[in-house]
Length: 425
Image (tube, rainbow, N blue to C red; front, side, top):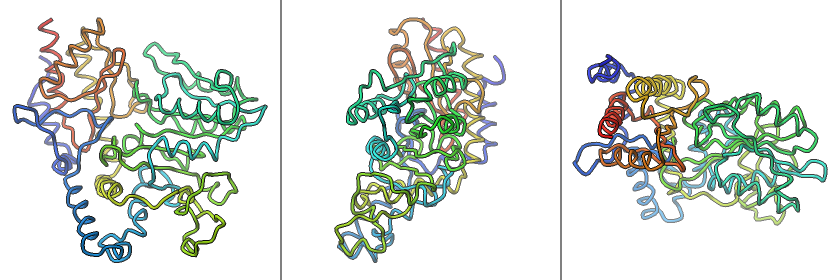
C-alpha cells in the first residue's frame, strides 16, 4: 500500500492543517450507527454552523421583547440588517461593498438582472450559455427571450463541451462569442460548472463579451465561497448566487447579487420595489422611484431577518478563516482526494473534473466505469457506509471536500469505501 493511502499519513495531514479547528464550528450529521458522516455534499447543501441556532433565537427573542422596536433597538437592528453581511459578502465576491447585496433567491435575482442587462434589439437579441447549464438558468433565459418576443430556437446559443473529459476550453468560449459577435446581447456563464466542477476565468469571459458589445453576467452558485472570483476586477456587469451551498446558510437561504459600480447610478430599466428606493427618502413615501445607488437599488422588499441571520453567522466564519487560506487548503484537500482515487481505484472511477487546480474548485465529478446501474449501486454503497455525496443523471457522483469542515481522513474513508465496493464486484 502506498503511504498516501494509509491512516497515519491522512492523520498527519489533519494534524498539520492550520484550519482544522473550523470543523468544530459546524454540526456534523451522524450515521445511523452513531458515527459522524463523511459529508461531501457541501456543493449541494452546506452544513449548519454551530452559532446559527443562537443567532436565530436572538432574533426571536428581540421580536418577543421589542416588537416593532426591534427594527431600531435589537441586538442587530433589523432596519440596517443587510449592512451586517455586506462587507464580508464583498470579500468573498471580490467586490466593493456597494456592489453586493443579499436578497431574494438565485433565480429571482437572475430575472431581476436580466430585466436590466438583457436589452435585446432586432439585430442583437441572442444570449450565450453553456450546453449543460443548470436547468433553472436555462429556463430563466429562455423565458426572458420569449418575454421580449423572440424565439429561443434562434436566440439561445449553447456552447458544447469540446474536451474529452466533458469540459469546455477557453478557445471554444472565444470562438462561440466571436462567431456570434453581431447578434449577441448577453453572455451568461457559470463561475464553476455544476456538473463537471470546472472553474472558469471570469475576466476572460467578460472581456470577450464586452469586446463584441455584449454584456457579461455570471452564475456563481458553485463558485462563491469555493474559489476566488474577483468580480470587480473581472469587469462583470452582474452576478448572482445562492447561499445554501458553500456559504452554509441553510436550505432555501437568501441569495446574493453583484452589480458593477459603473452601473451604480445608471438609468437602467428595472423591476422596482420600495426597499430599493434611496434610503434617505424611502420613508417619505413618495410615488416616484429613486433608486439607491449600487446593488442595493435592485432590492424589492425588506429582507427576511430569519433568513439573513444564518448568512451573517456563516460569513463571519469565512472572514475569520480567510478565503485565500481556505482556497489553499481546498487545493490541497481536493488534490489529495484526486491522487487517492487515481492511485487506488482507477479500475472503478474516472474523474471528469479538470486536473489543474486553477480550473476546478472543491468538487470532483466522478463517473463510475460501467453501467448506470453500477454507478447507482456504488452511490447507495457509499450512503450505507455514512458517506454523503450526490448523484447527477445519468452517471455522475459529485464529491466536494469542503475546507471548512472536511478532513484528509474523510477523503481516505471515501477512497477505502470505493475500494471495498470494487473488491466485492
